[in-house]
Structure formats: C-alpha cells, structure tokens
Length: 484
Picture 1 (cartoon, rainbow, N blue to C red):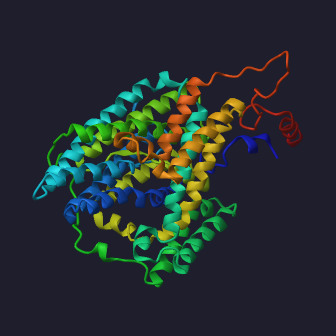
Picture 2 (cartoon, rainbow, N blue to C red):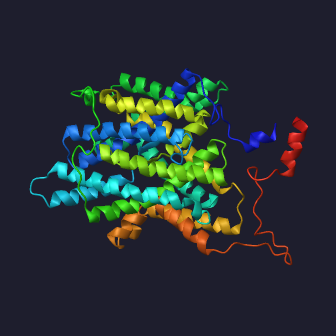
Picture 3 (cartoon, rainbow, N blue to C red):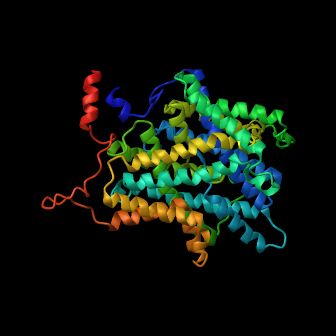
C-alpha cells in the first residue's frame, strides 16, 4: 500500500486526460443526470407560482439549458481570466427562486390584470444588473485569502452537502408532489429509490472503470425502466412542445425595480461564497491545489465566469446561474475529473435547450428515481467539506469555528421560527443555512485570534492534528518505504 493511496483522490481520468468518446459520453450524461432536475425545477417552480403562460415557462426552461451549456463551456475551457479550468458545471441558482416569487407576487398585487411580460422583464432585468456584483467580487477575491480560508470554504461545502441532503430525502420519498397528494414515503416510492441506491453502490464496488463511471447513469436508467413498468412515468409534458426554441435577447423587454434589486443583490453576493466553496471542492476532488497562485487564479476565474454567464443567461431569458455542487459528488463517485468531459456536456446542454422535447423527456424521471442517486451524491459533497476542513489539521480554534458555524447554520434550518421576529430583509439573509454557516465562519475566523503553542507550558492543545493530507506522517512514510 503506497502513500499516494492516502494522499490522492481515486480518479480514473485526471483533469487534463482526454477519455475515449464512449467514456466521455458516459461521464457527460452522468453529470447531466445529476443536474437536470434541479436545473429545470427553478423555472418550473417560478412559472407555476406566478402562473406564467405555459409557453413562457417552457422558454425559461429551454434558456436554462442553453445558458448552462454556455456557462459550462466557459468554465471548463478557461478563456484567459474567465473560467476555472476545472470540471465546474454551471446550472440555475436555486437561491433565486424565493426572491423571484416574492418580487413577482408583489408586482402582481399592484396590477388589476397581471402583465406577465412586465413581471418577467423586471425579474430578469434586476438579475442582469445584479450579476455585475459577482463580476466585481471576482476581482477582489485574491485579496480575501485571510477571510476565505480552507476552513471557511470547507464549512460552506459541508453546509451545501448537508442542505442538499434534505432535498435528496424529499425526492427519495416521492418529491414535493407526493407530499401534496399524500403518497410521500409509500413503500412504492421508498422501494424504487432504494433500488436505484443499491444499483449505484453495487456498481461502485467493481474495479471496472466503465461500470464505476456509469454507476449513477445506470442506476437512473434501471429505476426509470422499473418506474415506467409500474405506471409512475408521466409523459404528458411531452405533448404540444415546439420543435425548436430560438434564443432571443430581451425577448420580454427590460425593466428594473430597486426593491427587487436589493434582495437579488444580497443573494448574488452570498452566492459568491457558495461558488468559492464549490470551486474549492472541485479542485480538491480533482487532485488540484487548493492554495497558492494557481488556485487563486482558478477561483477568481470561476467566480468571474459565474457573473458573466448570469448576465448572458438573464439577457436570453434564464434565471441566474452558478457553479453547481452536485457534480463534486459525481466526480468522487465516478472518478472522472477530466474537464474535456465538460466540453461534451456543454454541447449536449445547448442541443437540449434548442430542442426542448429532448430536454423535457429528462423531466419525466420520477422523483424517487432521482432521490435514490442524489442522496448518496449529496452526502459525498458533505464528506468533501469535511476533508477540506481537515486539510491542515484542526486545533482548538478551528474546532470552535467549525462547531459554531454548524450549530447556527443547521440550527436555523431545523427551527426556522427562530428568526420570525427579525426584519424581513434580515430573514431573507439568514434563513439559508449555507449563508448562516458561511458568514459565521468568516466572522469567527476574522475575530478569534490565532493560537500559538506555549513553550513553557508545553501545551499541545494549540497544535494542529496531523493528518494524511498535510505532511507525511512517519508511519505512512514507513509504509511507503516498504512498498518501494
């Protein structure tokens, strides 16, 4: 057993490797399956809540796919200072759903007869302008290394994984639709989700690379076939779909509202912190540095791409985009970190957006099938966060920062009534466990002084715990010598 086993992620294809076409296609489809449902759901939720015309909602969904393809292409190729150069997948930012629904409802309340063009043009106009805040933030990231440390980034990634698990469990039991219909948690839903989970785990136990790479995709396909045979697949969304959707800049016009902008701007700035955590996790699971000039350049380029792509997305009629955390779980499960897989996936997304009936077919995958695969991947994201926190060991100071951040972040999500008496503007800021945990980590990291070991007392409490990701502990060094 070599030391490298302990130090490096278990990857089949490294960042710059170019997999054969079949392997690349499997990897691209696997990543697509991981993000497709959460990519189209924001537009569906916003369109349904605000009662948009069906053709308007369908256009939002198509543009979400096109914009995600363009964003992914920019991220993985890294044009100059734009992009992370990692297998960073772009998709719709779920954090904007609540803001857009609230702003849309407020506008509808002031109209006797809702003008949907005015509503959507205002929502997208506000989002277009707000995206420039992310672009500006990307330029100052190199100066924030004292603030955004591996511990802080790890807390954010851990909170992302733990928060996503909640949605994975909901899908595991049948989804939000099953909750409304009273069928949530039935034997049928849980059995189907468990089948998918078992298939994914079983295939990951094999040493054959293709089986491991395709484990999630195969699990979803098996689950879909079984669900179809059980009559759980609804194909009605495929009816009356346009053959081709053509992207049109500012199709519904451009309007602006300061009240909506303040809420959207806050979400944009907080999404920068989330993007930092996602990109850091992607670098780590891709066996790339998570500190130093190269990493700082990737980080700034990735966040810059987030802002630029959100501008492009909103101009063409999509909700804002961000770097997705789900794909870090896919990289760990499949062992594929090649950014060239992202290029193929970007092309597939653009095609799906231009031919909406193909993309809508993916939306017919039942929630339990998705939940069976997602529950495992989301937990893998949380594990990536733990690895980041432990990257350089954990002393008493770091333990206090992590514990307080987790306690407050998870506490708010467990008992949201805790903040019901706060002003509505502050509630929108702290009702997200990722935001609470991340902001708590930043503040504590700034104000809790660094601990120094005392030579006189010989107190070892302040010394970090040595772990395998840092330096070479003696016992592992001996193992490495024996292997040689």
